[in-house]
Length: 210
Length: 321
Image (cartoon, rainbow over all chains, first blue to last red; front, side, top):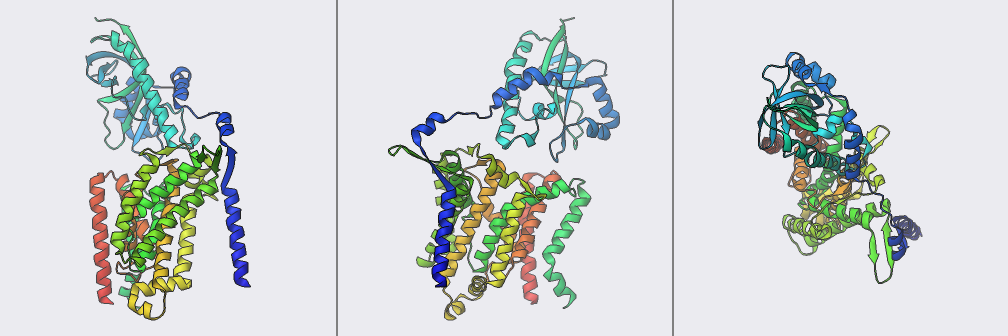
């Protein structure tokens, strides 16, 4: 008797699970009513780059490097952005500099107002999450999956590479002055303050060759 | 109880504490709440698999297919959840709810475990060979099912299993804690648990005493298959993506956790809590090495050395017994 009760309960349980596990639809109706409202990283990144990222406050480059030299730990802690536990801090930076050299992957810029402090404006091989994380506009907690979150970076980098850099590269030459705003990543362990690579979000040539 | 015996009994906990103290001194990021949860989330998958692996090893066997079973079952669950099943000729679409995907994934894992158990008991294939074959079969099937591409963009409620919190504790930790609790009850308070220890200690004696060895072994491989599938569901939920190469080398991590936790590779001796401690040691070690910026190549060397030392110490303590 007890065995029978166990079997009946078992069958009822299986039926209950099965009932709550699947649902049925007519295939043609489903395909008709299927409206894709997927998140589009491309559209989202375009919106960010066109309307929001230029309003993100940036640190002035000469002041930034002066602070790094004198006050590295507390300055990076206070002003650097980061995701979770990491040795990297991300910054938005703006400033003016003179073009020292045009290299394969970067334009080397001598920062105005500082003695021999140069940065590299990235013009090729723009990868990673520097721009997204330095902007502080995108929070991982807003995304159900890391794929969408990371694809925002891919699209932002794509816009920089295809829309911001090409017009600049057509005009730039050594000796020119350039106003720039961009994102950079700093490794707290290495404390490297020269040869820092900035992903540009705006570039303007302000003077021609001297 | 002598001091030496007491130390031997708590050697895994002592090793874990020592490791935590050393890492706390070497990295200021180690002893933080965020990092602690991070470690717990990361090891929860290994705990799920290692608990199953403990049962297998306690019974005198081994299962090398856990990583591949994890990948296949999670890929099938993710595929069904996202795409359902279409029957063109019948104009019918069968969609799977979250429960359906979880149940199907776990059933697939259990089924593969049954297959392993059947091969080992019916055809007398050594567990090493049978599960090695399953490692390749399941990985191949995963590639066929996914086409070699990840299945992404799953149901947000599914992601909750991997990224959600309940009562201030991450869901993967809850899941692994429940599994550990059930496994402790099975090993300590059920007939199946006693049979597993008996078979691992002396299979001939167990057979002569009337234990249905084949049934017990099939049960053990079924359980490890199901737990691998649950581990796979957690991984998939955390990443919101079923990766065709998920679970690579997970078998080694789980065996390492079992061995470091003091379970004898020849079977019959070991505990679930020991395995949990082993998984914690591996997880903390992995986390610490990353925080200390140790090269991934050196991380593998260190992990291998730790396993060797654990086995040597275990052997030495048994000699003393």
